[in-house]
Length: 392
Image (tube, rainbow, N blue to C red):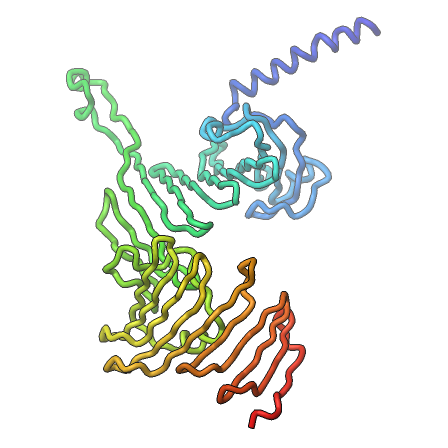
């Protein structure tokens, strides 16, 4: 018994060393087994884990199954090690179809469980090929995307302001074949035996700038092609398109918030072009709407005090520039900058007020300057309505 135990203690390190050496030599790039035990799941073709499998054998007998484990940095492909940090946990997954591996995936998670990187590789004829890499910041926003194929590679960087995408930069590389007569050693090429070589060259690059409406919906993308293609000034989304002749005259984050009192007027206004102006902080100052002839039909003006919107003015115009209607929304705030009052006017006449008390709003409607109806709303639901007597 003592001799038997001694052999086991002596052989175990040798076995571990041989196992490690086999992994490093034969498949450290993709094939090295994970350090922790794999969990097996019955899956579908997209790689979604449907339910746990009792064993690896049972899983591999299914049409699709998924092997999941946590691995160490040493088992990562070289392309991914540059992004690894000691605080990350690496989830490794392999999708099998009829017992054969078809796709591998890596997910880097920080100590809070948030994904910081996702990468995947397709497997064809037993050979893995990296398909994409995606990186995320601490807020979960996509900041880098790389895509790979046999003939092309692309990399896009994303930039945000207040969690709103404002710009992206893309570069594309293509695999090109260099004939022998273009090598740096023409004498060697002339001597024969020189084979064409392949290398990756940047073939195109561009910058996209994203522009938004007042409600922060994407209205257009301005593309500036730096190399490799024709200029595409603006990719617009009808019916609203920013006026092309401005620098700061487009919507940026920190747009104004307006009352539902203006919704009908704004949404029903016909429009061909919309032009916005903003201040140095990116806040919307004016919104001007034009018809197909270029005539101004509607205009909205936002008035700010510090970072608070104090009032919104809306005007509509006739074809000759005559003002048809004016609407005004005024806001009031408490000492903590919470909005607590709202007053609505049409052509200078008060029509509606709203008082906000936490989750409760008290709405009063006016006619000829006198209250005619009072409604109480709680968390967006009307709980009381009363007609006010004695208006005569």
